[in-house]
Image 1: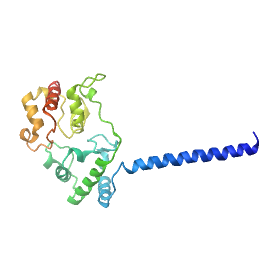
Image 2: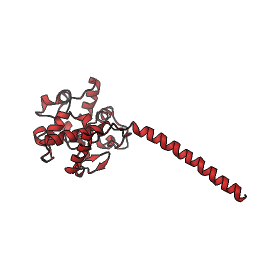
Image 3: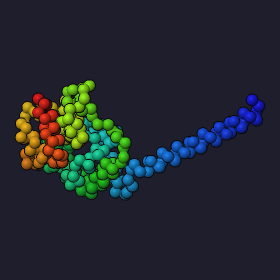
Image 4: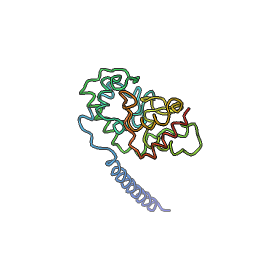
Length: 223
């Protein structure tokens, strides 16, 4: 190959791959634009509150942080904002069993932090962070999930509850819940938690009766 041919091959080859690079960049940026809502001043202020109180020292967000407390990436999808506001300012007034200390978060700071957490909840994370492996949580690692475990997983119960050491710690440990409560109590509690546990922060399980029965069947196996 002559020097001229080699030079032309290099030039055209470089241009070809440069065009491909531009195309891939354009495609990627177009997808990223739709993954996250607009960032406002309040959201930025909430992020500053997040760092001020070192929330990442106990919690995870987008899979990053510590695992002493629940992941908060999608927390506003699971908890009412009014509850979160009260919890942030005085955890035990919202949940007497809370292990989080009272940090002295002011009302304005709580609102800003909730705005930040609401923003993270709306970000399309493409399934990240992954949910815990519920088969292991139910003590049937390597086997297909039961119908009750699927309901437990689909409703995000593990964000607050622990089974065999897997899950969140905001709510009670359910490892032996089947030995503590009968079917009637469990079904009633799923439908209206506050009627069975005073000051319960748990939302009602909005699911068909058949799913509640499946979830109850699963809970009764945990003994």
